[in-house]
Amino acid sequence: MKKGIKFSLYILGISMGLVAAGCGLVYILKCCGLMFRAWVKIAFFVIMVLLGLALTGGIIYILAKVFLLPQKEKRKRTIQKVLAAGGIVVTLIGTVVLGFIVLFVSAFAYKPEHVIEKHGQKMVAYVESFLDVGVTYHEYKNFLVCGYDEIGYEWYGDGGYDPFTGDPVPEPKNYKFYDTQGNIIAQSERQWGSAQDTDDIDITEKESDDSAFPPEKMKCTFNEADTRAFCEMSYSTDGEKWKETDTGYHYQFFFGNTGYLVFSYNWAMQHEAAAIYKSANGGKNWIFVSDTPSDQLLQNTVFFDENTGIFEYGAAGTDSYLLYVTKDGADTMRKVDLPAELQGQEDKIKEYIRGLN
Image (tube, rainbow, N blue to C red; front, side):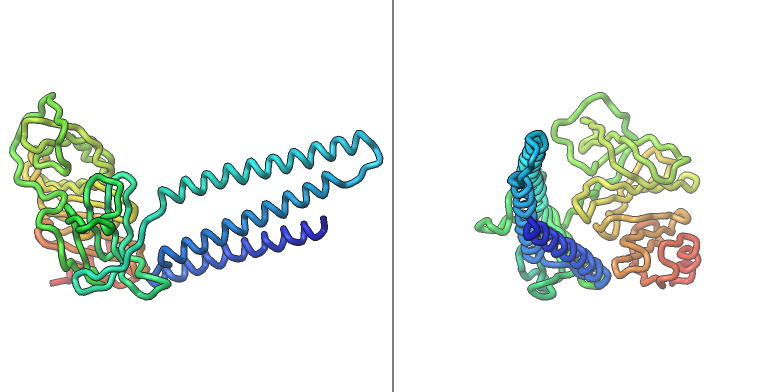
């Protein structure tokens, strides 16, 4: 039994050491703008599963030894055998249940990896196909790591397949790619959110079975006391058939009759689609202006006046932080390299961008 205890403690120590080392390496790589490639994660996962099975075997060995230990009194011997046998059964059932949970989670978390070249860059592509088919692209570094930040995204619509295994490879319905400095180098002609001017249309009770989102026309009731809130909006692609949806979060800003609405409408892992709408009559009609300048997760957006606004992405003080500024009501965006000590501080950013040309 001593050998079993020693073996189990040895396996447990190795497992905890590997987990601590793995978490530390992941954090260090993230700080450097890197992350492990998929095969490294899979290899680590397999090693941890094998160590888990070894630990289970060690525990069962210890309990079996306890089961076989002699006892002078019959009553104590019976209790000992029942407890030991129960421990073995519980350990086996727990291992099987945990194994099914791990397999279930892994099946949904698994993202096939492909190394390809696009737009003159070598990239690592990860396919997400749980509900719809999307591909995220990261900068290729070497066989161990790739860039942490996304430099491209493609959306293929509904499915549940790997587009790179098809022959020929299907064309994406929507895409956007960036260079390593965060500048857009390629995008589809029509991005989600590219709507036309809206008219003042009355909302009807009709529903659409196939309305697209984001809308060509929309109406929404706002609580102007809340800058950031959740809302339901009615939208239509033709002004006749209307459908209601929850936009997720949205930001709203009003300066007299001029108003801005920024809302997300499509989220997948570490990216999202978000659109900017503008009103010139206090929110009665809304006109689409543009998509937000990046499809990374929008951390914060503020309009300081009817023309000037900012869009912040990533964590302040890290390499993932991005700041875009507009001074013409979101018609154009400019990426600004903001000093680290000002990142995430609205008042200081406001003063800083006033001095920009």
